[in-house]
Image (cartoon, rainbow, N blue to C red; front, side):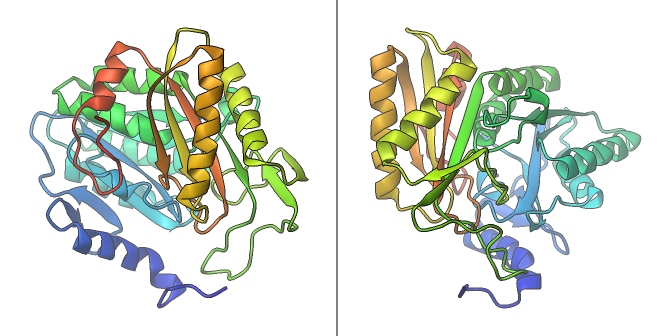
Length: 330
C-alpha cells in the first residue's frame, strides 16, 4: 500500500519533528529524542503529567501535550513501547518540584518500561506516581484489559486537575476515578499496515468485520458478517453500558473515535444512534465528541467510549486547554 513516508525506519522521528515544527508556539521536541514537551516545561509547583507508547495512534499521545493536559509525551516505534531512558528524559524535563504522574496504557511493554523509568526517576529524588488505563470492555478480566481511547479522558481530567495546582496524590486520585468509570470498545472493517512491514496485520473479507479489536491490530473477540451502523453502534453501546452498570439519570461523556480510516460522516452516523440509545435508557449526555483521537494507522473502524461523570469530572472536562488535538468542550 502506498504511504507518504520517506524512510520507514525514520517515520517516528520525522513525525515528532513535524509536530514540533507545526505547533512551535506550544510544543518542543527535545533534541535527539522522540519526546515532546510543552513549551513552558517544567512548570514550577505543578504536577507534571507524562504519557506515551507506541506510535501509529496519532494524535495520541503528543497531540495532547499542552496547557491543561499532558506536560510530555514519549513516542516509541510503531506499536512498540518507548524505552525507559526516553521516558526518564520526559520525567526529568517536566518535574516542576511537585512530582510527576505517569499515565500508562495497559500493555506489558508500556507497563514494564514506564515503571522502570519511575524507579530511575525516584533514584534521582523525583517523586513519581502512576496510573494504568484499562478501559477496553471487550476483555472480561479487568486486569487484562487494554488501554484504548478512554485514555484521553484521563489525560484531560487529570491534566485539568494538575493545572489547578492540586497535589500529586489528588491528581492521581481523580485519574483513578476516571479509569474506574470509563469503558470503551472498538470494531474494524479492515486491518492496518505497519510502514516497516508493508502488509496488513490481519485480513478481513469485503463483508466481514472484527468486533472488540485493540489499537495495535490485535484480533477482536468475534468476527461476523458486516452489519449496519446502527446495529454495530448498539452492540458496542450495550456492552459498555452493562459493564459500567449505567443507570437512568446518570450522566456520561462520550467519544466516538475513528481508527484512522473512517470518514467523519460515518462517525456522526454512529454517534446519532448512540445518542438515541442513551435517551431511551434515560442516561444524560453531558458532552459528546466524534473524530480521530486514538487511531490505528489507517484502519477502517471506530471505537466508542463512555465515561460516567460526577460534578468534579464535569468541571475538569470543561476547563480550558491548549493542545493540538483535543477540542475545548464548551
